[in-house]
Amino acid sequence: MAENTEYLKPKTNSQIKNTELLRFTTAGSVDDGKSTLIGRLLYDSKSIFEDQYELIREVSERRGEEGVNLALLTDGLKSEREQGITIDVAYRYFATPKRKFIIADTPGHIQYTRNMVTGASTANVALVLIDARQGVVEQTRRHAIIASLLQIPHLVICINKMDLVGYSEKVYEEIKEDFEGFASKLDVADVHFIPISALNGDNVVNRSTNMAWYEGSTLMYYLENVHIGSDHNLIDARFPIQYVVRPYSDEYHDYRGYAGRVAGGIFKKGDEVMLLPSGFTTKIAKIDTYDGELEEAFPPMSVTVHIEDDYDLSRGDMIVRVNNTPEVTQDLEVMICWFSERPLQPNGKYTIMHTTQEARCVVKDVRYKLDINSLHRNLEDRNIRMNDIARIVLRTTKPLFVDKYYRNRTTGSIILIDEATNNTVGAGMVI
Image (tube, rainbow, N blue to C red; front, side):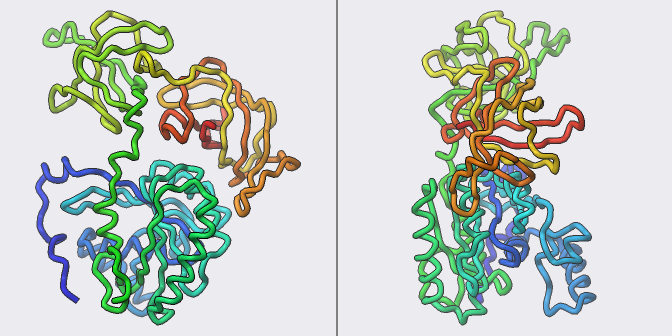
């Protein structure tokens, strides 16, 4: 097979800096080949060092495995290597001339649902792997439902281990039809199917000569070219203030800027804006970055905003449009994924984190627990344990500036922290 030499070309710092960043996560059942697929992506795109490859080759030989086990590139924990499974979320970074990538390799086991939610929460694309021999199984459906709940914009169904079914087009079409019937019930806008063999590299980075009947793109081509510019909300302008920049030096004697990451919309110099919670209006005087002044800023850029008037702003406040404001409320209904071994406490008190705000809250009600396999609402069982997903009502000690999660994944998400242990116990999506 012809070598894809594009990945061998050295990249300059400016090329890497200016390329677009795509985050994607893997999902699917146990032993569907998620870690092997990521290892294959890294290896075939020349994104691992020679000593890394030599190390996993030696480990594979010691374990008596045929060939090199590329899954060892992401399964870094000792317990993961001993059991041959993924337990924790493993993040990997690589870049091609077209894009930078952050990968979250997430577990397939049901007891690690919380880890899958963590890895998928910021993803543009979810790769759902299906074993061609097994077809669509319960865990496939569960992870597709979670991807839908998390509003991941793009879903790629990788039908893996095609080499073990003789690269059969019939098997591929049957699995594709089965999943399409299930996905019609989900809130997923973009679903793409690719037949692959992660072990042999078929249709991962290079096109497969074994599946001439497949006329679609390889996985790498899809990841490099899928349009993600509209994944961010560019309509509702939201700028949560993270830090007040006040140098206190002679050179910048009068400098006062508000630093943070744009969570939605487009901010331009001269725009009329509203400051929350005060409700005062002013105009943007300028937008600064480390590299100099900008005319406009949009998600997910990190910038420093200056305003024309001397209003008092601090961490947790938000800059928005005058006629387009988030909901300012102390009462939240959220879908929560519970992370803690200690069950959610009715009327329990927790610390709530939302954008750059921190407050305290109390659990007012548990509406229902969601059956992840069927999407049915369990109204009887209100005991929310680790890895459960439920709809709950929270009351906060101060108003938060929220949007519904489906409109904005940043201003529509919260996390809960146990005040006694300081552990993160839940992650939620505002309904």
